[in-house]
Structure formats: structure tokens, C-alpha cells
Length: 553
Image (tube, rainbow, N blue to C red; front, side, top):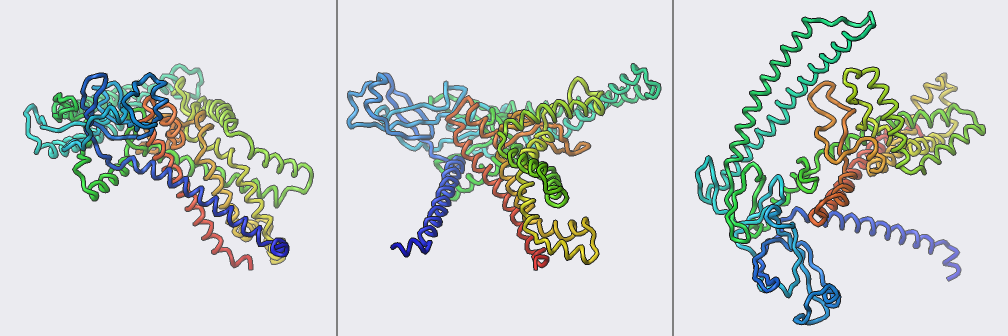
């Protein structure tokens, strides 16, 4: 046994066991988050409960959201009559009833002893709406143009409503947005002319009456075009408002749901396994491609996905050259003295600074100082409304670039230190200059280390939330940082982020129970995005390693 210990085998087994345990823990956590998140989109069965509450019989329709066993002593302490309960515990159901505008809450809590009968609700429909959450009811007809039709026409009505909704989105997001952008440009021109007129600078352009008349004419033309598009918009909205889906709720009341609110409808209890899987895939795609609604508790997260990926890519473009140049100077050019050692210690210590401190620095320096100066010099016609003097995606990327800069510097410098001095001396002996040696020999050989630093930077930056809350991220962003208007990439705009979306849905949502599955789904999506970005960077690193392997020989 002593000889076995001296051989070092126990330490090998201990290390292998620790690594295996860590992998199992990480994979288990990812599987738990993925299961909790992705199962949210699976069509759950809807039940009809006959319930006895306070001596009266009621019918409740909804999904079983959660089931727990509650000790009888806890119920007795809460003042509930437990004389008819047998055993030490009783199941308690959390039931999602929906129909938010007709009942007080989305959820109701029932004890099993309060349920006299439970059965799957036949032909029950789950109706997804743009507000007030989901509606549970029995469709009985469809109103089209003031005329009531039968249940067989509902599918055609939903299809027509979706086509009209697509036209509405096109008008709002394309034509109206384009006209508003052009109107804003003309108003900025008016503002510049007014500033030039009031300026005493002889070099400034004098106020041009013909230019003003041209601007007024263009504004009038755009307003006429806006009125024409607005009329088309009102016609489409009125059609959706007049058309309605007729359903019967769980109390037996006939309810008319305007088609302007209805987004989708399905019969969960009538779906086969293939139908449920198809519906699940459709809901996942909608979650990935649609905008959020209902205070982020409904809809999709596409703006948050786009904002996260775009911000990380912008941060990578900024931090990589800065970190590489700093590492090259420290290792290749700076002298080996106390000052250089002090700089290295400072760089390492910067990696331990809390991220919120970087957020405060970014708000004070980048936003107020740099952004305010840019506004004064280049966007004076838009003041007092700031352009760059307010939090935006550019300042978020710069703040995270400063935050992750030590990681890139240290990783790159370690890669440079691993390159033998004989390689540099051989290049110089063949007549190459130091810069040529650095560019053609040293940097290609150090590129895998540079990519490793970038991978670590991306992994940290993608999950940061605290500094972004100060320098650019918002709960709801009206537009993406990229659109079809010049200059096409708008770095001054605020953006949405998956990490902040998780915080907002999980801790700021007015309906915590309804939002909980979205927290898991968004968390799993954030992990997937980070893993995807890292795998891309790892693939590039491996390609570079193979490409420049011959230089190491």
C-alpha cells in the first residue's frame, strides 16, 4: 500500500475523480436548466376540475403547473379545516387558469381534498393573445365582417387574421418607420439652419430661404404620405377589431375575443405525440424569433439574442487589438525593470476589480465625458436630446472591453513567452527587421494563445449584467442597433441583453409563477449562445494552430 501511494497512482485517481465529478455536476446543471426551460413549450394537458370551495361548487379549467405535498400541521396552522383529511400530508396543486381579464389571478391553489372530480377537458382550446395572457375556452364560432360563422370557419379566420397582422407589421416596421426617419432628418436640417442663422461666426453658412422652402415642401410631402399609410393602417386594424373569435369560458359565459388580440390557438388535449412535438418546435421558433410582450413574460427574446451577440462581437473587435498590442509592448519592447513589473501587477489586479466598478467608470468616462463631447462637437443640432451622451451599445462594448482586457493581455503575453528566442534570432539573422519578425513569425505562432484569451474574454463578457445596467442595456428596446437607414449600424442605441432579461423576468415580473419557466428557457439560451461563441473561437484557434504548426518545427 505504501509503495502504491509513493507511485503517485492515488493522486491520478483522485484527480480523475474530481474532474469526472465536476463534469457530471456541470452537465447535470445544464440538463436541469434545459429540461425546465424547453418543457415550458410542450403543450400541457388542460383539465376540468369540479371544486368545492366554502360550501359552493365551482368548475375550474386550467393546467396543473405544480404539485406539492403539504403537511397537515402546516395547513392547520394556516387556519384550514383538516378534520376530513387522512394521513400526514395532502397534495396541493398550482393550477394555471389564464383568462386574466376575467379572473383575479392567472393561478389558483387547490388542495386535493377540495377537488371532487377531475377530467381532461374535451375540445378545450388554448388561445394565445398579445395581452392578458392565454385564454382557456371552448370555441363555438367566428365573426367575420359582422356575420357569425360556424366553428368550421375558425381555422380560415385565424389564417386571414395572421395575414392581416403581417401586413400591419410591415406598415409599422417598414413604411411608417421609414417616413418617421425621413421626417426626423428634415427636422434636423431645419435645426441646423436655425443654428447657422443665429450664429455670429462669419464662416457659418447663411440662412438659405430656398433651402428652408425645400425642407418645408419635403416635410409636407412626407406628412401626406404618412397620412395615406396611416389610413391603410386604420383600415386593417378595424378589420381585426371587428372580426372576433367566439368562445365559452369555464363559467359557461360566451366571450368574444377580437382577432386583433388573438395570435394563435391549439387544442392540447386533442394533439397526438407528433402534433405535440410539431407544436413544441413551433413555439420554440416563435420564442427565438419574436419580440417580447406583456412586460417580457410573453412572446420571444429575439432582440435580446441579437443584442447579446452583437455586443459581444463588438467587444471582441475592440479588446483583441488593444490587448495584443499591450502584450506585445510589455514582452517585446518594454525593458525588464521595476516599472514594467508594476504594470504587470496592475494588469493582473484589474482582473479582480468588481464588474460594477467598471460600469460606474463607463458611465462617467465614456457616456458623460466622451459621449457628451461628441454630442457638443458633431450633434449640436440634436441637443438637448443626447445622441452619444447617453448609455448605448458602443459604451457597453467599450466598458466590457476594458473589463476583459487583462485576460487578453495575460494570455497573449504567455503565448509570446512560449516562443523560443532562437526563432526570433534566426529571423533577425536572415535579415528581417524586428517588426517583420514580429508580424510574420511571432504573432502567427502566438495566435492560438491570442484566441484563448479572446475565448475567456467572450465567456466572461457574455454573462456580465451589472455594468451593462449602467451603460446601455434596457428592459425593452424599441429598435435594433442595425436597420436599413444610414449609417445602418447605430452604436448610440440602447439594446436588450439575455442576462438582463433573466434578471428582469425573474425578479421584476409582476407574475412570478408565470415567468419562472421563461427564466429557465432564457438561461438555457444564454448558455447556448456562450457555448456557440466559444466553440466558434475554439474552431478558429485550432485552425490557426494547425496552419502555423510548421513554424514551431
